Length: 244
Image (cartoon, rainbow, N blue to C red; front, top):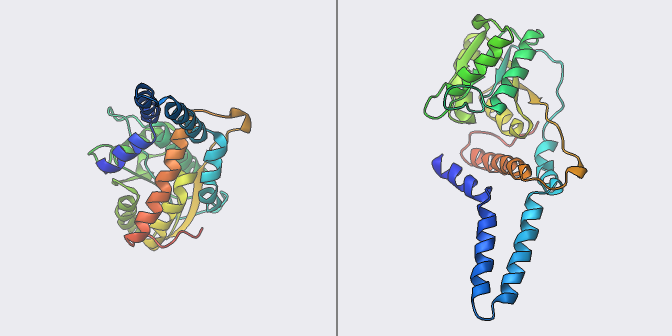
């Protein structure tokens, strides 16, 4: 887990700008290295522009998004909102807030009789779930209808939520998470024997006019994380290939 965060943090951080600058400077200082430094600088700039471009992120994410079905009005036996971490002082992060809000709205609209919230934060296996419960309570979801389940990753969340879902005779679940996460998350719960109705958190698409933005690097990191997660989970036998 620590290694994964380290690799992603280095690969999708401004460090790449520093590396390009240092390489160009090294060759610039070497005798006859001006031409090489020039090429490294231009190549590095082009590479950074590609990574931060809206078009590149859309192209890379297209296969993943194509696996995500449209949200429906179908009812289920339970709503399951997957966690997305919490701040060090226990407040929900932006991702957790969005998932909790959507999950609570589905419950309040009568789509299922209870709401399961999962997820860890740091070493607290229920930290993310507790943070999400803050949002649900704020929307007037009764405590008696909220179930918390621990989970340090998506697979663990599926395992920990399963006993409670089974004890309440929940076979069909409305699974709430962000669109990029839907293929892996739905595959995990299907592997646990549930009928899954994926419900993606709505996200605003960028326009071509948005061009280049460093925030696109964050989106690209999330997409690459999901592709790698699908491969690792499939190799470990935690999921079958996600056909949604």
